[in-house]
Image (cartoon, rainbow, N blue to C red):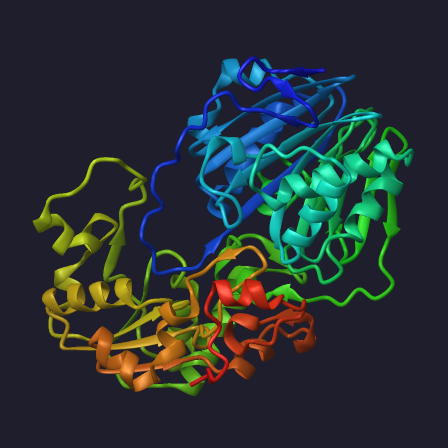
Length: 503
């Protein structure tokens, strides 16, 4: 039974009565993360409220839609809508989501259009009861998987690869397998990136693809006199906000099964090969999240320090593009001896709006999000540090704003290599011909964004400062070396330029 008047049950899936268009995606010069996932198995706790706060901490991973499904015996309570977590939920709605287990999701679409019908978690009926699934990543064999499921006479409601994973599990359950057997069989049908939280009437699963491209961590809630309760989250910041302790990562190719009996682990693939997305460390994940035993803030400081060693330039002030460029800028300042300061102030309350600015405002569009400190910048030689350049449009606006504020020189330093290839594993990137570094040299980019000098961090430098095995990361957006084979038809959809060279 599924309890939610807005999401009536239909065949294997949840049918949404009306498709509500999302607000348009804002034009951005950054890659966009696909989504954040969360799950909690905690009888006697308010799991919906804990999931709300977990998603709130993961809001940076997706701002299009949010959803929570809770399990109360055979009944699943579900609410999902377009918008930010704080817009989708309130106290009265959360009270309508009772249960001992919850699955949560916050989304930025990469596969499937921006409609509420495609919001997650996906809830599917099976022989053993309802299944709720939240997915971070992207399948590269979605068309093949869909064709196989059509042969099995499965019904589809959405256009997402996430629903296909849920339906694949349901199909295996309906063949007579138990939850674990069905999930493992379904995972073996999938190729690409997937970190999953999955709820069932009897327990919760967490799983990662054999390369562990997208992150997923395990946390525990401890209280004297109560059994240990388990939490799954895309990042450790989702644990911190609810007072859960980080236990460990879900390993590549691992499925964890959480029930009243505790946590059991199953390694379902013979050849896991860790390939965590390096952009998680550079930009996507929150700086207070922990990866490889340290906060990402510390890694980003080292990126800035390495950048200063590779591309020093004499200047009066080092500053970062708020907020993601700031740790690397501080690292650059410390390594170079050039003072760090703030020259740009970010309006953190700028959100999406249907209200269009005037033409005059559009011409000064960067000012909606960033404004300059003129008395800091006047007559100064500035080094501005950012984590990436995708198209160059935002960089150009920032540089012009700095010059208008009186900066005498503007030198841009980027704490990652040039982005030359699109991502197929859950990051929303442009077609390759829209990636400025795929078609222009560094000097040509410098001319286009009107800086005095431009330098990127080297690929080897980026990997070396991880202080981990440099082969354990996916850096395909910089090299075109994809760890999971991309079908030609999907490559063509993003116009892969076979003669592209990293410049």
